[in-house]
Length: 83
Image 1 (spheres, rainbow, N blue to C red):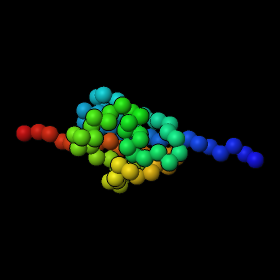
Image 2: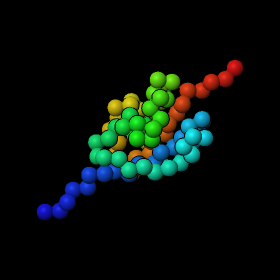
Image 3: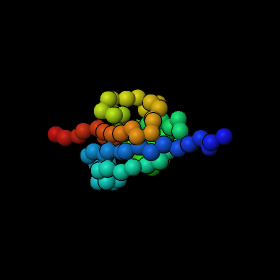
């Protein structure tokens, strides 16, 4: 009986101030059945959730409870400010 893979690897794209904090592109490993919110918490940027952080998975705007799959691309889109 083969051992089941319990992890997945995703690409993370950061924009705006998050790109300055985390870098523009990175790859992270998560447990299977992880959500966008799980990834955000693992990255240590959960405070951005209350600031209006939006996410996109594979180019589609997604909810924070969207389940991620191996090879997905998660884009982190902080709110835009200006004046």
